[in-house]
Image 1 (cartoon, helix red, strand yellow):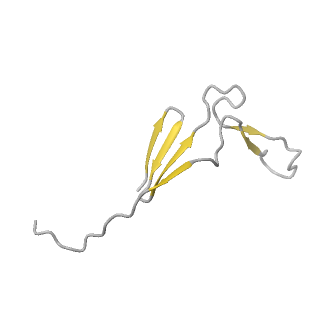
Image 2 (spheres, one colour; image 1 turned 135 degrees about the vertical axis):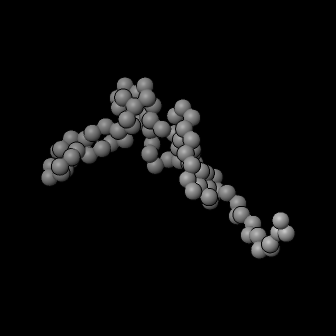
Image 3 (cartoon, one colour; image 1 turned 180 degrees about the horizontal axis):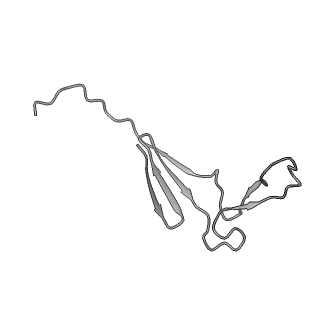
Length: 81
């Protein structure tokens, strides 16, 4: 089960075991124009088909907040209804 909610620049993912909150790229950023990344030059990896992607300063794709959820109780009894 995965549900995603986006509120402005915040993306909230709800899983069965945890909630993840991540800040998205700034849509008004003049450097990346809201994509969250810059393309590097071919000089760093000349044999590659595509240039390196460098994250913009307005967004850190590896930083998020994780809120663990408690264990769910296991119901072993049968209810009469």
